[in-house]
Length: 114
Length: 115
Image (tube, rainbow over all chains, first blue to last red; front, side, top):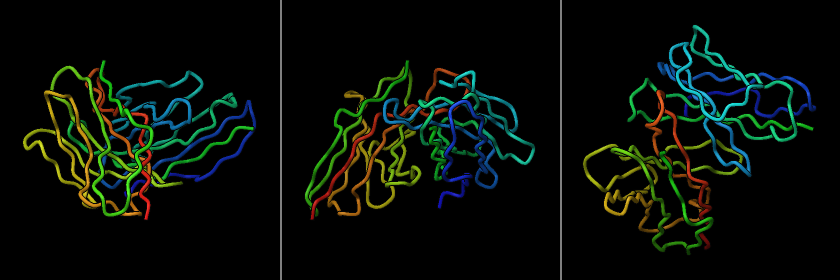
């Protein structure tokens, strides 16, 4: 158990809908990352938050947004969903902003868009 | 741009034999390199990392990795494979090209250990 929790485990929805994925980092970790894992794109970085502030953006679509709350949990919002958004979404956390910090991953949320 | 490559989609090895999962990297500057393992329907588990210092890094579950700067490689190794090592393995490098500390992952290598 990495100490990172994600809810829900599975999510099935229809095209055009909006969903929210939730992540709680390990105790004491200030950085939260979101990654998307799909068969065709592999594991791709979406966005990072550090202590409530957006720190870096990766290949995140404009239809997707995220935030980190004062208690450090994070939410990833996916809207106007398309079939191609079906993927496994991982949250990871690390203590801070050091390049050497290890990222610990949650179990993921499997999103299926029908 | 930073990148990491895993040249083999699949590695097959018999139980008890040594295993190697290959990874090469391309970064400007000193790399921070990581190995993760993913079991079916599970998240990624951290195995080991190279930051600086000794080129041979020891990690979890008996795995180790050798950093080779001249060959820009960071191969994962284990002296004696177990059937339970069968999983998907990812090599990753810290993305030093942006303000954050995200990881860039290879496409993964499936390790299959037969009994």
